[in-house]
Length: 121
Image (cartoon, rainbow, N blue to C red; front, side, top):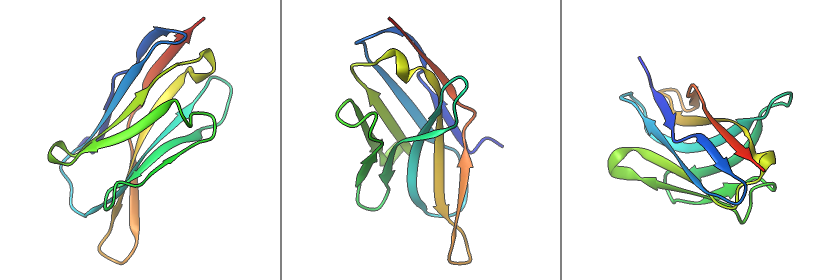
């Protein structure tokens, strides 16, 4: 059963834009936040952006602040990552993270399979 599915990656020239989508599949538990992470070749996974489901507060990693925007569509249980002014160093596999409340006062996290973003110079 697929709980999280991201899409929208592809090849783009430097300075271009892409919009990634992350859809939450059917599950139990109330959403807490959804986040975007990325992992570039030869590097560890890093935080990109996140959105608090309750109040739409957004958070961004320093490397993407001012260029990326995270938003949501509650009807579709979907979050988007609008990526503008892309740079070659943005090349990575982008992962969606779904954080939601469990039944015991905590939360759980589920990761998507990732979508590849390649930015050429």
